[in-house]
Image (tube, rainbow, N blue to C red; front, side):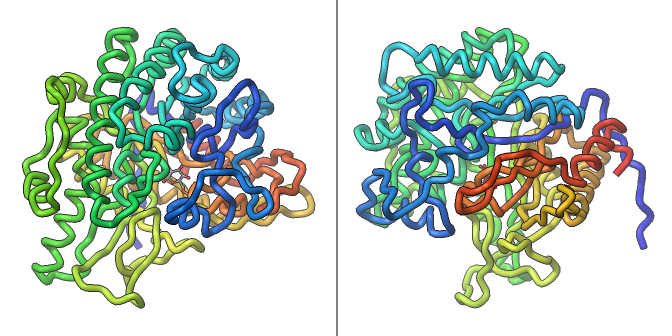
Length: 481
Ligand code: BGP
């Protein structure tokens, strides 16, 4: 057995947990909030398929579907209780997102909605009361539905202006309260699934890449404008990009598969970060654009904006690695967080088919730091699992502790490798609605929320075994695992 080394996390390492507005808040029509794309997401494993199907009309149809995000876990009303529990675990930071539609209900108004702004003031004040710094994602898998229906989502250049108005308002309003920002959650995820963050599904397969990359271009410009505004308005703040990172392993040493894995990794894992960190389109994308007949509409000045608006750090989500090969049969395919691939014989998968690979986190951090040399921040990582609530109210989630312990160790190894790491916010620190399936039963939390897939439950909160474990991890700055 390998000897377990003591790992040393740097002073001031940002331990905490992560969430997204649409997956925790509920109150979907409270406080003048407008509808967003997440509000028309039906519950169930088919939710994304339904949303992406041709002819989906983006209407709520309660006869046919349920909508778990509408109530979610009611953080909108219960935030004080939840933040007290985060404080009890010793969180240094809490990652959350602002719902664009609380601030601009339709996205295209000129004036913001004061009730929405006041809500986040209350949340930030409550966090700061306990010394917990908010880490805010400006856009996490939701955008105003009006911008989807009337403007065609991020394909439309006008959305850049609406987003700029939204970011200026929130940066100005919360400049005394929020030091850590990120622009778009898992920006690269749109390559596989543009509907959630870009607000459209290509009607024809042949338009897919052109539309998606045009929308990316708009998001890059919008992100760079936000970065510049943030640096001007809040000079002490740090603002990052956020990417979904699943390192791509070649299935074997066949050079055909190795070049395939390398090209997949460039396109999916690095393309967005290259633009947002280095401030320019990478060399490899020219060939891809040529082969796919993509000619982007780039306005005068856009490339300068992108150059001037590079991010301070990279936020990443890490759940799993992806093993892949050029030719694969249906039977070989694996599932996973948006990305596919083939089954890796060395890894075991979660109940949802996501392959568990702590060493993959060390590999990811090394790859990213080697390429960019900017600080990294693991802002999502965790195990979605079925939990059993015992009669005495306890939850013995030792499998979750095992998963997290190994990933924390992997970060320790990466730190020793020389990687600069700002912090770790594990995903779904309180049980929440799953993004991909809308299930409550796919639980990630340290805190159990009494709510079931059919919407029943008291919403009561309970501390799981992992709650007490994570408290010790934070207390000891990662020494006691
Ligand atoms: C990431 C998203 C999150 C989150 C997480 C877990 O891709 O940024 O919003 O939900 O994955 O995924 P799921 O909820 O599908 O288990």
